Length: 101
Image (cartoon, rainbow, N blue to C red):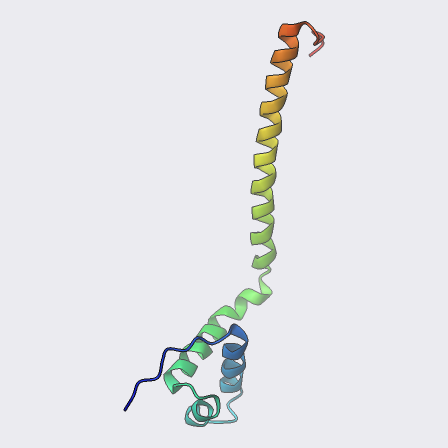
């Protein structure tokens, strides 16, 4: 018996199969035959869906995106502070900066 080459399935396909398994309208064997995957794979995808479902309602996706933006903004603030310090020093040496600061 020849072995089949390893296949990669899209996340949409995995979700479709896992949701069909969660519905419980068909047995794992029937789903495996219908979608041409191993029953153990369906069980794994079903478990992943059950574990990850709670994360959909936590709003953690927005927080992760926001933290990346905050990091980028902090880096930009650091760059600008460095430029301001450099320019104020250069202008001070040239006598063009007032002593009000």
